[in-house]
Length: 361
Image 1 (cartoon, rainbow, N blue to C red):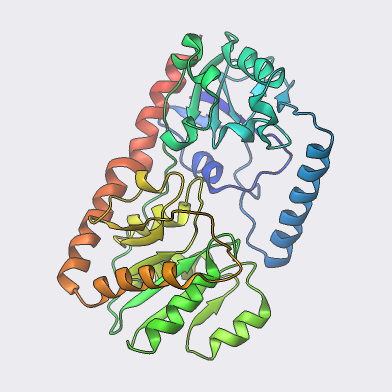
Image 2 (cartoon, rainbow, N blue to C red):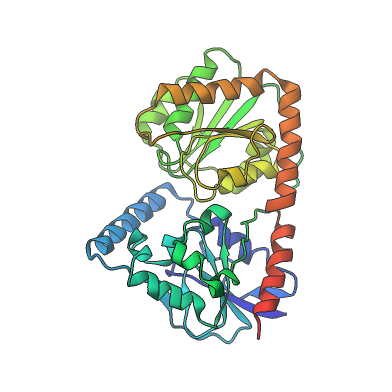
């Protein structure tokens, strides 16, 4: 059994990506990281504190006008190191990249300018950096042109889509069409748009609507709860995966920008089609008119105030699936097919196993 350790940029990292790595390693490999380590915050107060602390830290760093690559100096007795958006100086390693700016502490575009760009380029061209694994093609396109066109770096690039496990729980029979939205960052994930969508739909259709968000303001819970919308700040994993997902028909995701929507991919694994606004990598998850709808967004809109035109477009697409059971069924089949072909643990592990094996000297 070959040993891998995931090197994190901080003592803590909040991402389902790494939870699904540690819990589901490629055949023949084992991660030495503690499986019980908290990799995903589910407590509302703790998550809010984490978001505020991260933002304050980032702003302080950005005021210094210095971009610092996340470099780790630890030496491990393992076959390979998997760096989570960071660089290792003393180990052979592969590095996954959510977006280019996640490789620096300040998360700013300073890192795409000289001299900081030169530092990042030199780190990526070092011989101990074996593979560079952008999460998506959209992630890869965030790399500055000078880095993407570097021959040595280009040869190391491999797109490795994140994966989620399949729970293999049969759909629960239910009388009403059920819509679901999940997004820990309430406003950032378009939560206000979804609440208005649900309110408007309920005026005409007898449907179930569920919204789950760690950071939804209490005043909105009270306001929209009166319309019969089920609102949760958090639910147990058992309830989410054994009850809520299996009884959902349409996943409604109001986010305008998303580096990678794990909740969307989880929806696909449950044969649930998705309706969302366009942004970043969504076209790599959703095939327009096949397993969901992507609503074009031509300019930046406020996430704190609903734009009626955009809301109406979302409403119309949702109504189309509500009123066409055969179309909904077709989208459902295509959703699961997309999951199996691109985002399953099996597909990811087959590719990751090859990457690790080729990276070991």
